[in-house]
Amino acid sequence: VKQFVEDERSLIKTPYDVQANNQEHDSPTSTHQIGSVQHGSPCFVYTLAFFSALGGFLFGYDTGVVSGAMLLLKREMNLSSLWQELLVSITVGAAAVSSLAGGYLNGLYGRRICILLASFIFSAGGIILSVAHNKEVLLCGRLTVGLGIGIASMTVPVYIAEVSPSELRGQLVTINTLFITGGQFVASVVDGVFSYLPHDGWRYMLGLSVVPAALQFLGFLFLPESPRWLLQKGDTQNARLVLSRIRGGVNVDEEYERIRSSIEEEKIDAGEGPVLWRILTFAPTRRALIVGCGLQMFQQLSGINTVMYYSATILQMSGVQDDQMAIWLAAATAFTNFLFTLVGVWLVDRVGRRKLTLGSILGTAVSLMVLAAGFLLSAQASPPVTFHPNDPSLHNSTCITYGLCESCMLNPDCGFCYGKNGTVVIESSCMPVDAASTEAAAAGRCSNGTQESLGVFWAYNYCPTSYSWIVLLGLILYLAFFAPGMGPMPWTVNSEIYPLWARSTGNACSAGVNWICNVLVSLTFLHLAQCLTYYGAFFLYSSLALLGFVFVVGCLPETKGLRLEEIEPLFGRQLCSCGAGGSQSVHYIRVNGGNYRSDEDVTDDE
Ligand SMILES: O[C@H]1[C@H](O)[C@@H](O)[C@H](O)[C@@H](O)[C@H]1O
Image 1 (cartoon, rainbow, N blue to C red):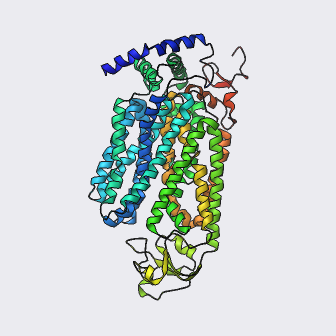
Image 2 (image 1 turned 45 degrees about the vertical axis):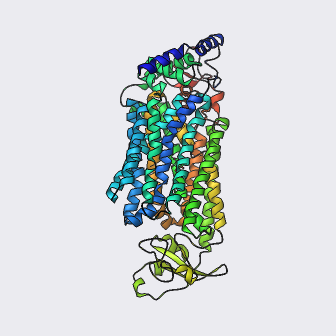
Image 3 (image 1 turned 180 degrees about the horizontal axis):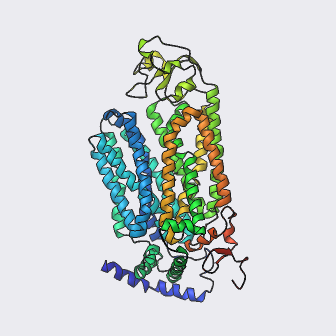
């Protein structure tokens, strides 16, 4: 530590620093031009962003890997559907709880310790999962990784935002979401590869997350704390050293002074009592919290995780019969999500957060309508049940009571067994699904292993249709619109809209809202589909996305290019009147230490 401090001290005295100081004094405008400050080489900042975003990778990997692992686990451990559901949702539930707790830990111990803690928890969870010998230990492992995901999901964007120069901030925080979708893609490839192993493939799937987790842990042993957090805690010397290190010595004094004076001003705003109470009772932070939580809520309510989770089914509807093929096509879906998030990284600091989010959510709503229309047309053309097998073992089954493939498919206990004459469906029946696998019927022509020889097909969760191309089109459009904007922007915007004193708690609340809505949407999708059918469910998501569009039009100000300290004033105006891109032309002044007002409205006396 001593050596580190010495090194850092010598860094301050570099010619760079002298040059920076001179420049600053020569140029009277340098502290007031929005986004005009040129920083030194961002190499170190990229390194910081990479190691932090490994947290995003683990978030994506651990949420994505479970669907493939479950296919093997349910066979090897004989899991009931309740246990399968438990193993999937306990992770998301734990993430919701720990993201909320993460706010407190972040404020108290700092971003770096929280990232170290999350990577330690991820490693421990990975180890528990890979050596698990029964389902209870598995559950404990899934709960552990969930705790890691929650802390990482709220800490990493905050850390990256706080160490980035303003002109790169959007891009660097969005890289975290790129890593989330990258993690989901890698997980689907790992699932595909290890699904060929006859035994224990799931141990590798679940255990491999230890590698990036350990890498992040080791990396963060050597990486610094956020200078903003250090300054807030009064550790001025280290804050100055770290800032100098991450800026390569350029413009350090200016940034240091700006953060320091903003912390001083914030002390006046912050008031007394618990942070959440102070956020709620101070208008600008209350508005920021509504915007942050609203964005996270609409991200999940527009159904990303059902689309990802059911992509295999959607693709099966498009005519892919083979299960192994469906796994690989689900990997293609995850890759598309990743690819379009890359577009978001490229766009965010060019077009700005507001335009990107608006275009994305509108496109998402339209794509959901296309998806719904595809499902609607498929349902209308749903083939009827024409063959009723006379098997006494089926007499108690509800499956044989359905008259259409559509209703048969919506019952998770049933599947559709049919023959083909050219493209026409013939001799179709609705049969109970095999208890061990959804790949075959419990009895009759479509029971295990006999389909091919009898020339019949088994459709679980979908109906044979000629409109599947519309559904496929909807899926691709959905990912193309959602991934660049609605995927990353809620995380990016939340990392920058709160003042320092409210940042940990604000992000904890909004991340909590994200995880709670995630659980809600995933747990209700099947019931929703049963009550409203697939097209009803997707029309509902589409309407929610449209509602989100209205919310974004009214409430999301542009934060592109602004320094973190310049963003709070944007929320000094009434909520839902922060118009498009106003930040570049309107200047705000804090009046008498209270609310911000546009400088045009403030009199000289004030
Ligand atoms: O931003 C991410 C990303 O879009 C992921 O693909 C999704 O699974 C997460 O729920 C979301 O928070």
